[in-house]
Length: 186
Image (cartoon, rainbow, N blue to C red):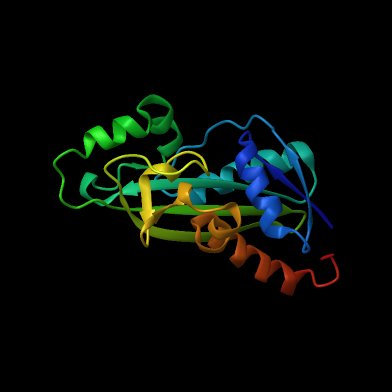
């Protein structure tokens, strides 16, 4: 079975393809999907998957990621992409000036869609916001989120693909997929 990742973010497509290498053949389609709104990333991913599957009619996955800062009551949550675009990492760090607690977490929901329906898989990773960006790898908030002493941007793709929120959700999807479709994997 070929699996299509539907995203406008090429970096996400690369991460997914690297993670599923040897399990599924992954292709990338940058389909424009209307932004669904919900407080839950799983519901947003489900809405995106429904829209994408209605148009493409091929087995696919979409994802949605929330980034939550504990001391800011979970802000920006499911609006992480918009906040990154408007405030950037510098703006987030400015909001955090003087805050003692810097705990934050990412949650990714992967939605798989095929003719049988939509299935949701999630992964969460916890870390702390740094005082300044560090690292040259990754994308988005990666340079300002420290996990066990290093930012996600200080990790190689291979390292990040083991511990990240997206990796945890993809692992849950992969394990389910191999059980449900044992003859479809490469």
